Image (cartoon, rainbow, N blue to C red; front, side):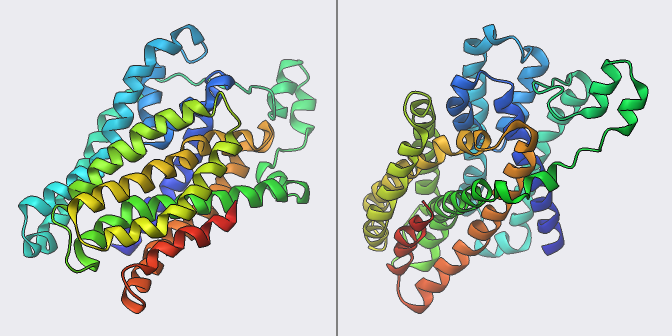
Length: 341
């Protein structure tokens, strides 16, 4: 199981930054915040967008308005799928059934992506909005000089991305991704287990509460905050989200620890909505942070290091704080982590 999880993480690490960069670069730059927000609410968005691009030419911006509702549907469907499967499993299966075979059933939902891969393979057409930016061999062929095409130095984007002059942008990418991943995993991924298992009394229907807040507090709110970042400074909106969560987070975790359904619902929702002010603009910010020639390598390195640090350790640290100090202690992860800004 550990090997399979490492393999899955490795594949997502390559797919996520690549799909994010490609999705935004094929859209008008003035709408990058909006499309970055759509991307962020679901890991299905890149594939859904690619399917749409098989049908609607990505270089034809006249279709901008027509594809939006379809993409939103794909995003909402993807972001709630994991929570929905977990909630249904907890609702209808006993603990013994979950441990013996129920956990395997959730993996079958991954088969839904198979038709998409066939659609991409059969109908997708390559479109490079940055053709010629960093492809020396191709430029040599265009000039008809075969010798120059073979003698030009081979491009080394990873080496370029790790040069000293790129370190400030790379470090800011790592730190901001750490804040993003830690906030999201603590608020949505870990919080359901916290409400269901780690506090006493536990909260009935914890996974359904988490599902509602995933839809309203993260998905729907992110559409608004990402759109907002196209009209106002992205960094200012992200600062508001990070500082607000750092201030409000501990109090909301304290309310959730009471074990009351209504209090937990609205406390988690407030954290999620404030988190969306950071996560909404974040994906456009990470792409436009780097020049075209090293964008994918830089964003990939920065994002994957940051997400590994935050998503890998935050749930474990939060659980250890509950067991070692008390049920309110994980709330202080929010103000501690906001030093990344």
